[in-house]
Image 1 (cartoon, one colour):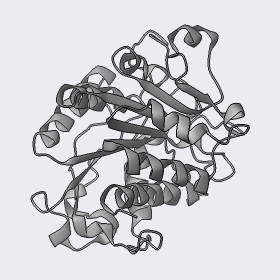
Image 2: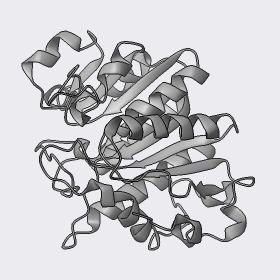
Image 3: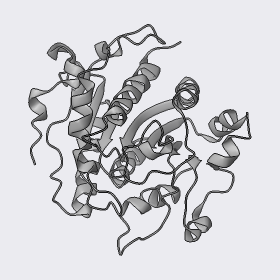
Image 4: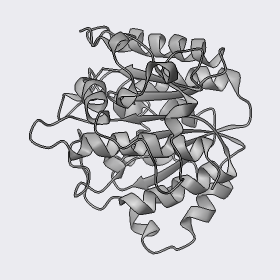
Length: 289
């Protein structure tokens, strides 16, 4: 399925800000949902994301900036959504490694959460003192699920065996996953609501270099209903931004992904939330406030 990214720029920005040589950021679309186990359709997420991006205001009030001027290059046609999960992960690994070698800030839009396996592998080869900030309703720590170690329910297991894994917003898990949780590094949603110091504590646990993986279902479904496995009781918009701004201020964020957006023809607000979140994170990366 060709999505023809070559003719697109993020949010319609001028082409002079969308070339590889002029862009600090690369956006890697991964239209893949082979491992999704409830609602399928997140392979359509990159297309819906770019469509919604046409309607974003490029001036960000909070940071008093137009961060697109730092450049955003869309990587064209990386993934065929019909390939095997193992091949998809290998492709994501190699394309991430390619742009890391060019000293680009890596961002990915998926697609189911299994895409993170490949990108984290590549980032782990480049950066030392790395930790993973995983924001999700689910722990995703199964070693194997439905016969595969690459299922979206396994997306953080490999990372958990290599790096500090700080998990935020968790409110659903299988009992088998308890043995793989890193003690003290998980922030359950029901405890977040009772602890005013959770942001400070979470940031303290992160190492110098941080990769952020955000599953859309970390948000409460009242503000982000279009996702594959919605769970009640999630984070809200300004709480999430407050936390992420602190992360960018205190740590060296070297990339991020946003996954599990599942476009719905009758509801496009989640598509726009993903775009707004993406642009906010770039603003926090490059604009000091």
